[in-house]
Amino acid sequence: MNFIFDFDGTLADSSLGIYEAFKQSCIKNQLTYPDLNSFKKIIGPPINKLIFKVFPKIGEPEKEKFIMNFRKEYDNNFYKKSKWYEGVVETLNYLSNQDENNLYIITNKPTEICIKLLEESNLYKLFDTVIGIDYLLYMGTSEAKKFSDKSIAINYLISEKRLNKNKCVYIGDTFEDKISSEKCGIKFIPALYGFCSWNIDNSAQFKLETISKLIKFSNIT
Image (cartoon, rainbow, N blue to C red; front, top):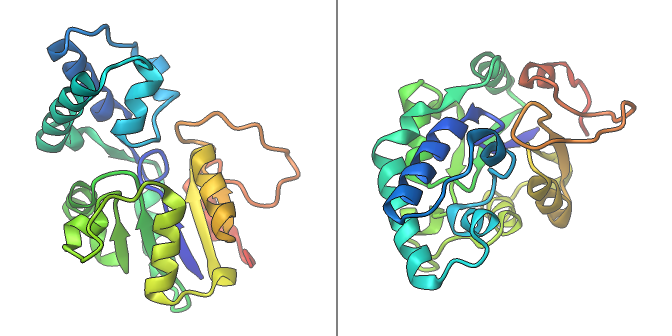
């Protein structure tokens, strides 16, 4: 099985670090920052889209300055405030030890930061490929630009690795993750413990109250 994971809100609770970087950027731009609980409900999109959820009328020059400040604050300091959700380390190790499984990450997080966090916890070796929003830029490919949508990143991975879509599942915590998975024609499993509030039918076959439950799914296909 090809397990494709989101990062923020699925593998790691990065809300505090993202919030602190956002808060500092607000202060530098003389903007009123939201409270943490309200902010956690909108985490998911990359910063160039997230900012409009808080400041829908922000101008282009101010937006660019804000994003530059955010990236400086988060990439150099606050990314370290991420914490793995309970059961993540054990679950990833278990899945990677099964010969029929391959593990991947597709995230709106910058590729280098994602890899740093994985390496610091000795988890990077478990993944075949880690694709952040800037993966093509990070790899220096001829198509060097950021992914505008997760579905594009998912299709890129499927094409590059020649994956069978029937053997792929995306695990994420937001509605964007669900929509992107469906757009690509692969299965989706919601991480109910993440940032998004889900209204899932109790009869739903696959859902994760904790990531450890992924081990119990004997027949995802």
